[in-house]
Structure formats: structure tokens, C-alpha cells
Amino acid sequence: MSEYERLTQRDGYVSAFLHPDILWSIESGARGRIAVTYLEWAGPNYQHVLIPWTVIDEPGDAARFAGALAATPLAAEAGTSISSALAASGNLFATSSLKSDRWVVDVSGDGPNNVGPPVAPVRDWLVNNGVTINGLAITLPRRSEADVAESFGEGYLETYYEDCVIGGPDAFVIGVHDIAWFEVAIRRKLVREIAGLPARLMTASYRPRSHPVVDCFAVGQAPGR
Image (cartoon, rainbow, N blue to C red):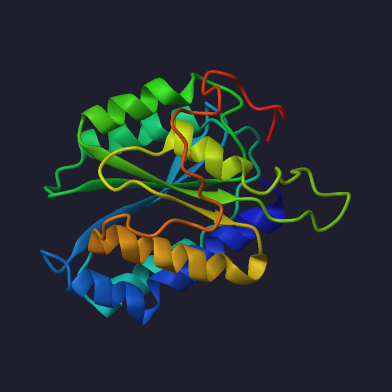
């Protein structure tokens, strides 16, 4: 990701956890609380827990989580190893002492898996162990020629996430193509995940198909993203 995308992503999650809609979805859930951790990732050798498992059941918890996330410096790591990030997420579930009715990975990125193990087998392993994986596919326009990351064509990354990344009961992907909608997209995604809402609504770019259209075992075309 470019620095612009990383900052936008981080700010979007910070704002989301301060929004009343998130608190409402937590309070209206089956247990009235959630546990959340924030994992920053890039290439196969970089998966870093910025915020450890944190139980949120009242506004103060959410504010502290958001504040801690906002205060963490941005990293400048290269590579897009979704497979390694998913494997690290599975390890976080396995080593947690928390008990939960649902386990959900919220993965966001701006490109396909381009380094590390193939993503589909890792996805399948998590899904077979009861984990739901949802995606936020980021394809923002380049701000300048100096930006390292180029956006993929509109719709491609959502298709890739649908075929290769997401999985489990009611899994879904949301595409973000406009910076103005980034915060809203993150908030709606988190509300839907926390509340456990069924995937009744499809994004505008959704196209029903009878078989996958992406080769999940092919790496991305832009190494180092």
C-alpha cells in the first residue's frame, strides 16, 4: 500500500470504533460484547499485532481501542502476502484464551496475494476450522506518479477476493473506489460483521457466476505491493 492508503485505512478503523453504529451493533449482539485485535501485515515476514485482544462492551473500551490504534506509527513494509496474514490470524485465534460463538477475520488490502504461499489453501484451512473471512478491497485512484501502488481496474479486486480470499458463513467483500466512502465502507462492514447479519445485499459490482474467474494460485502482477 502507498502511505496515503495506509493512513486512510488506519483512520477509517479509528473513526469506525468511535461511531455510535459500532457500539449499537455490539450492544445488540448475542453477548453484548466483542473481542477484537488489530494485525498489520505486508510481506510473508511481516505480521505485527498493533493492538492485542481487547474486549469491548462499553463506549470507553471502544474509545481506548481507537485511541491506541491512532497513536501507533505507520509501518513502511513491502509485499502483499494475504496468505501469511490469514495464517497469522488463525494463530491468534488458536492461542487466544477467549471463548466466542463466532470467529471473523476482517482483511483489507489493495492487491492480490503476490508473495508467500498460495492464499486459497490457507483460506480453506481457516474456513474448515470455523472461521469466516470477509474482505475490504481497496482500489483508490493514484494521487500522483510518485505513488508506489497503482489501483487495479474497478471490479477486479472484488472478484479476486470473492474467488480467493473470503469464505465461511455469510462471507462478503466490499469494494472501495472513492476516498470519500472509505470510512463509511469500513463502518458498514464492521457493523455487518459484529451483528452477524446475513449477506443479503450485494455490492454494485457483484456479478453472479457459475465458476471462479480468477486463478487463485497465480501471484499478483505487481511484485512488492
